[in-house]
Image 1 (cartoon, helix red, strand yellow):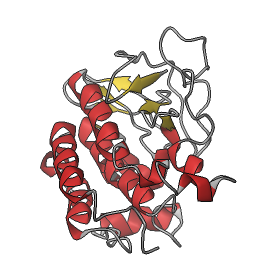
Image 2 (cartoon, helix red, strand yellow):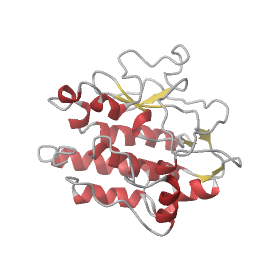
Image 3 (cartoon, one colour):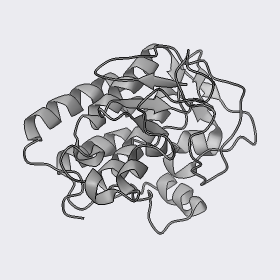
Image 4 (spheres, one colour):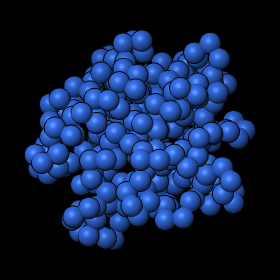
Length: 245
């Protein structure tokens, strides 16, 4: 199942399946959770890029072709599109819990779809507490969720900040050189990833807002969407993701 985002939404509901975990540090390809409601189970919508997701489309065997012209990683629309999809999920009181580039599908017309709702939950009282022993992709998971199992839409906001680093670095694994345990320890001590090479400071400031220690201080997806739409409208002629990498 997936949520189609701007410029249109083909799917407006996400009904999560039974609970299951993702092993710490694993980033498996999106699987049976893909596709839209109404599509055959496990079948992504026609024209969608299948497999590992958004960034893999730009880093597969056709890297040169994808990085030219209207390639995914050179198209700014994917940034606010993903935020738009998450803003819709936010309004519906769902949390995704596995937001990362590997779980973004891209159609041939560069419409992005948020996919893989295997860990998603409808939340009550603004918080969902994971069962003991549940496993998550540590490098994308907010510290309060990774350490204490407390998930909110603001923990998805943290993951969105990590996803932004994937986009601007054309697929670099977050926290390069660190293992999961080190990531948890360093983040708890206040470490945040530095501005990626070639990334504008204002975009890195948005990442850091998403990584505020207090979840209540992180921006809403509605705010993130508005910021990204305004930002890339103003800077599109000057900024290309990862130009200087």
